[in-house]
Length: 262
Image (tube, rainbow, N blue to C red; front, side):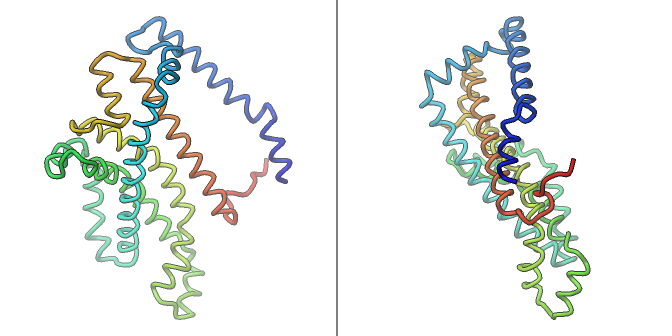
């Protein structure tokens, strides 16, 4: 089966659509760049910028990636705690969920300056903004996953007089893993967005791709702006690939990872 899968990945039907899509996008980009150089720079200029200043972009990308991952970890931990509480208690669910919804609709950008005033120009405001942006999507996926337990299986645990902790650890949490990975595929790119937005609005930030984009935009250096955006796109794609590979390894048993019948 694995050899068959490896052969299928080398077949034109697997990689040709991606190559064609990238090629068409590159041609359209070049045509737009030639017609309107104030909107898009030529791809050659962006590539030259990345090659000649590789260390500069790697250094700033690492700062943004660190902020994104730490902020995401904080948001995930908070979402897990809240999801368990609202799943186990109807009173807590009615008390917490309205606040979570309000937190979700609140424009984080509006409170970011207040976070800078309260916590200074260090990494704290960026981590809080990233955690706030990733919290709600992860919370909803965790709640859905924890509540996705099959009633007959739950009845079996009840018959065996399993405690709430045992039901949570042996049934609800393992059963929520597909929803957790679905949420991670959403919040990993969001964490990069959160880190970049935080760098935009934290004037004390001296490093990070958000700062690079902000400074380059102010100086009309379009190639630098898009070089930083390319770095963000590559980082987002690699993070998504990492989550997908981890999901395939952890959820081998789940039907979502089984070969599709054509």
